[in-house]
Amino acid sequence: MTGETTHNLRGDYSGMRPDYTVEQAWSAYSREEHALWRRLYARQAALVPRYACREFIDSLAALDFGEAIPRFEEVNPRLARATGWEIVAVPGLVPDRVFFDHLAHRRFPVTVWLRKPEEFDYIVEPDVFHDFFGHVPLLFDPVFADYLQAYGRGGLKAERLGAIEMLSRLYWYTVEFGLIETAAGLRTYGAGILSSGGELPYCIDSGEPNRIRFDLLRIMRTRYKIDTFQETYFVIRDFRELFEATAPDFAPCYEELAGRESIPPRAVLPTDRMA
Image (cartoon, rainbow, N blue to C red; front, side):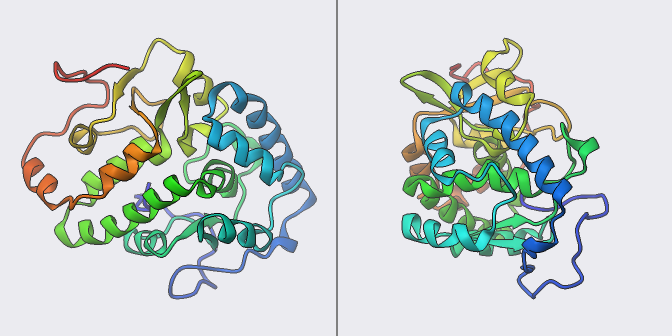
């Protein structure tokens, strides 16, 4: 999600810079927060070998940040060498334009606060665990990293064209909740899934959700739910397919879809190719 919400934003926005960045203030994290991080990390790390794509698994192992909340300043030199990206600390959700601008300049915003123990299984807004565990490992993959930058550039244009809703659906169904074909079978690369203890096995093992082959226009028309497991997942062939999908100018897509009804999250169309 790109950062718009109807409830009061969590996080301290009082000391942010004009681009919404803040200092991570790593020394301010408590022993209890580091312990909660270890619990969250251990749960997800035990699941990813079965359900995550190989690119995520390999990067997660190389990063090795299971013992404490990571210091962003220690990760950034490695990330810069790998793909030219950096992570920037933010107080929480940021406006669309700010989010797109960061991505367009190869900066990924990572929230600084950590959920409370009673929120172990579910939070309304992304916290540092979701943002870092779910997103950062794949920033080390060159093709996926290029896709995110292209998405950011496209977002700046979509805002001018009044097409944010359609583009946000693409982010949701790929970066947050996407599935990918692999030699080992279906796996996930979506951060919203990878940071969820319940949805990680559900997205692969359950017979309930639809799994539909990637279709750009179909995704841009499809609504999604933020408070339940997804009813539909879209499956890509590989990260190159994502990058190629963002290469063309989306303006004709927005024009083609203008005025057409949205598709409910659970719907299956006669033209859908099931995975």
